[in-house]
Image 1 (cartoon, one colour):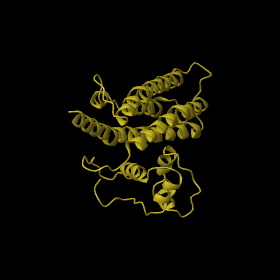
Image 2: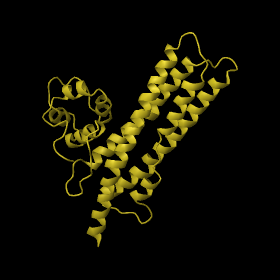
Image 3: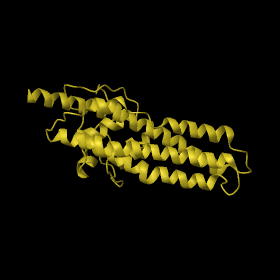
Image 4: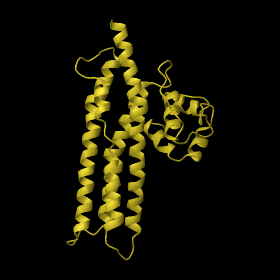
Length: 235
C-alpha cells in the first residue's frame, strides 16, 4: 500500500468509526467488539486477537484509498483476510438479506393480486438464491483451496485465476430490483416503510460492491502471489 494511509495503527479506534461509520461493519467482520474506550487501532486489535495490519488494510481500502497489491511486502495476513470474508458471507446470508426480505414483505402489499408486489418479492428471492450460491461456492471451494495453499499444498486442477475469471459482481441485480420499486410500484398513501427498505437495498448494494472489490483487489492478488511462491519453492 502506498504511504501515507488515511488510517493508522496509532489512531484511536473511536475516531475511525466517527470519521466513517461504515467501518462498524469492518469491525464486526473482524470479530471486534465495541467498548474499547480511547484505545488505538493497534491496541484494540491486539487485545481482541485480530491482525491490525489486515484490519487497517481493509479499512483504508473501503475508505477509497488508492490501492495496489505489493508483491514485495505483505500488507496483511491472508488468513485474517479470509476470516473477514467468511464473516461477511455469514452477515449477508444469515442477517442482512433475511432482514431486507422481512421489511420488504411488510412494505409491499402481497395480500391482493398486485402483480408488481409479487414480481418484487420473486425477484428478491431469486437474487438471494444467487448470492447464496455465489458465497457458498467461495466458502466451500475457494477458501478450502486457499487453506491448502496456506499449508503448502498446490492443486493440479484449480487456481485462483479460475475463480477470478468467473467472479461476477453479485450486486448488479440489486440495481434492477431497486429500479423496479422506484419506477413501477404503485403509489400508496404512506411510503415510509417502502422508502426504508429501499434505503436498506441501496446500502446492501454498496456493501456487496465493496465486498467484491476486497476479494478482487486484495484477496485474489495475495492468493496468486502465494501460488507463485509455492511453485518457485517446489521447482
